[in-house]
Length: 89
Image (cartoon, rainbow, N blue to C red; front, side, top):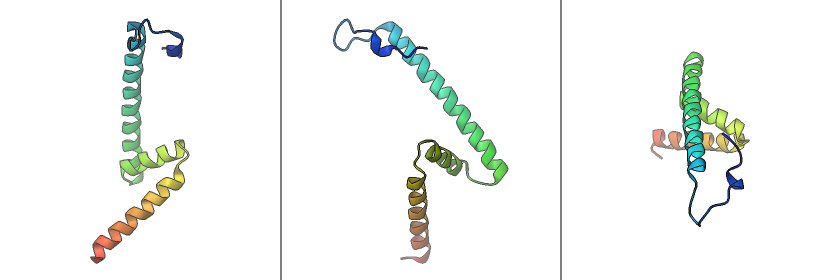
């Protein structure tokens, strides 16, 4: 796979060459494979550490995307909503 998709000029507006389509399909398949492996790894590690896989995935993604503050605020909001639901407020 290459990084030169933008170097190939289209022959007509809206026309994407077969080579570019093939490379994009390969990139999509690779991304799906990596996403599956990431999900499986998070599930396995979460089970070993006694936490929910979704929480671990969100935490890792927040770290990777430099959005830990956003994740923390979301967790606080969720705690408030749960507390309000339990108290009937």
